[in-house]
Image (cartoon, rainbow, N blue to C red; front, side, top):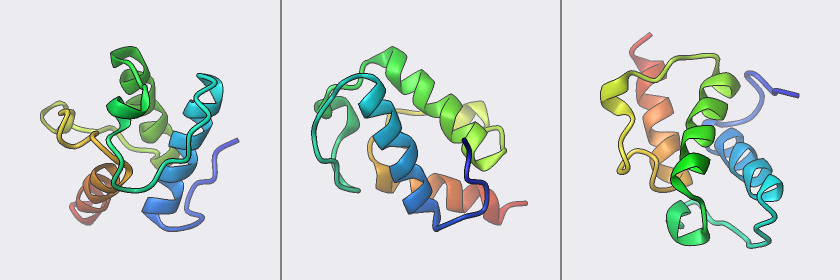
Length: 88
């Protein structure tokens, strides 16, 4: 179930990441600045994360913005979403 427009971008990104971690049986607390790859997410997980973020925020992330730097942590993803929303 998606929660469009409920909560801050950071809270919504945190929820998406936590659901992905649960699906992957990664039982680790994650903080906004934690490196998601270091926590255990694989390249395929990162693709799934990007798709889940697009669905959560009902947007398409431009290809040029799909970088390791933008998807390093909850904070970087939140900043990306905020910047993209400001452009619309």
